[in-house]
Amino acid sequence: MLEEDMRRILLIDDDKDIGDLLMKYSEQFNLNSIYINNGREGREYIREHYDDLVGVISDEDMPCPHGMPEIKGHQVAEYARAFNYNGPFMIYSGRNLEPFEQSRLEGLGICYGSKPDVIPVVAFMKHL
Image 1 (spheres, rainbow, N blue to C red):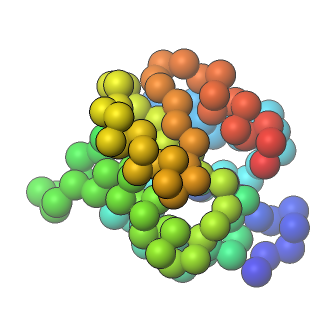
Image 2 (tube, rainbow, N blue to C red):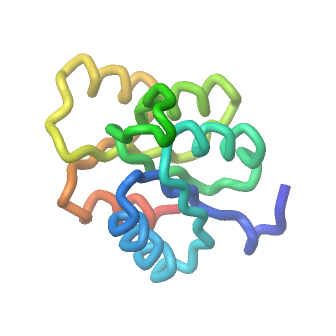
């Protein structure tokens, strides 16, 4: 486990502009951030560094590079929970989630926000 001031938030989004925006917000709350552009690498980062994370924010819908199968944000969250990462986790999406998708997230203790509304994201970071 890292020193308290070295703990970080993991930001996962395939859109670099959104990733840059999230990193700027995290700096405003004195959070060290790591940006990853796909769910597959995000999942691996959580596996290796889950003790060092104060929170995770992930896009729901992300294509995977190099033609690999897509890993959605909720799949990253499910993996994180199965791997004993019980910290704060937020999923956001540019589309309205179906009721069953929202129920699945709630069952995992995952917050949900919609793009482009950044208020839920900022509020999530503020409470880390």
